[in-house]
Image 1 (cartoon, helix red, strand yellow):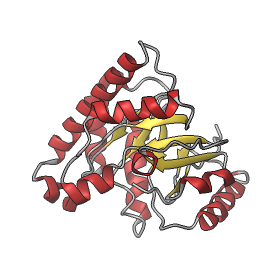
Image 2 (tube, one colour; image 1 turned 135 degrees about the vertical axis):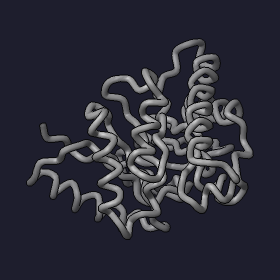
Image 3 (cartoon, one colour; image 1 turned 180 degrees about the vertical axis):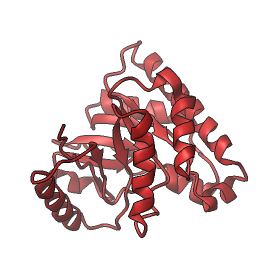
Length: 233
């Protein structure tokens, strides 16, 4: 079955969202915003990379993050496609920031996912209008397989799931493919979302997205992989 690649183009500046139908913007850029972002569906990133890289952990609690997501939706500021859970990256330099292990980061990632789902359900009286995106974490392919199993039945059939700790591996795309293939081998139904990075150019992101979309129309795509470019995480 052929699936079309869908891009949620990551933006540093929310004002650039007008150029796209789907975008990815960090909660760090949306915090305290009052002006509506009109038009695109927004994948709200948790700002995980910056928080852990600079501070060794999250300064905002799950409850504070949930309140901000609730505010953005309820006040009509953002049309939220999904809110990404507060995950913990597993690159060696990130483990050094926290002093914890891959297993610890995987456990904490699931704990924060569960807490965010529960808090949003409470804030929205049991009917959160947008999904929370769980994130698979690890470094070697078997790590991700283990994390899938740790999530258990939280990962519903066809669920939209993030794949973390890959954005710094652009120089070795074969390593990224190995991770994705390992996940797909045990859960071929999942819709995988890859996190990417680029400095500030939405024009470059648009050109790259159009190039990949044109290519995908000429050849089979074996999984749906949404690639946000330039996340201001």
